[in-house]
Image (cartoon, rainbow, N blue to C red; front, top):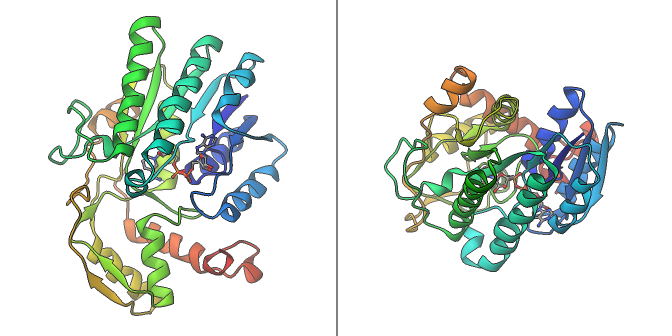
Length: 315
Ligand code: NAD
């Protein structure tokens, strides 16, 4: 049995599906909080629950020690967290509760129950480091969200030193794809282009990473007896202007697009150095980002009535 925390979230949903495709039983936990539309989380959950190998536990991270103490779990994929850089300026305490206190409870429960611990860190730990970012760099986060992710890595390192507990920390880079997150740029761009809402883009490049790639790399790393942190990026930074132009041409629609100045924490460029990850699991080919953007837009624009799945008009 595999435990996936944050199973109704974007990446947790895809990872739980992958685990079941590989013949595993999954217990998914989520508190279904309203950081973004809960309807989207319930829709993802409905798809997971259609699989007889899936069981859902509605609740917070405080429940994990009890769950794991029952025994029978081989791995815990800990994806539940308060995500989003911008919102951590508004409510840092929320980030502390989920990402530091909640994380500790999950990690400690894994140590006690000898469950393999694989958790989502973030590229935002790198902050002001020059790109491309590699794992040996000292983290310099520029947001409290990034700080909490760095704290997670430090806590995991502490348990490794004290108890020899191995863990795998995954530094995800701007993940996108079907069933994605409404607070992230890819969704916001598509929504603005289609609805005509004004969109202000900054002069920046992002190492967008398709969720399929994230889940595949996560799965491969998790199946190795490792300890440490690993970049999971697309290795292919895209200029936001180029992305928006491509989205407009694919959607055959002109958005109300303007430009804005970057905020201090809004980095000019993010880019993963994937050499450590590739040395561990073998080389993953470079992605054709246009193909994945089209896939996202196809999902985004599907009418729920026509296809039975929610796209833009469903939320
Ligand atoms: P998400 O918000 O879609 O998923 C997180 C899920 O966890 C949500 O369904 C939420 O309800 C649940 N959750 C949050 N706090 C909880 C708590 N205390 N108890 C129980 N459930 C809780 O986010 P996501 O994009 O799927 O991100 C998954 C993980 O990957 C997070 O740890 C995030 O920080 C990290 N990450 C994501 C990205 C990205 O681009 N999406 C990039 C870097 C890191």
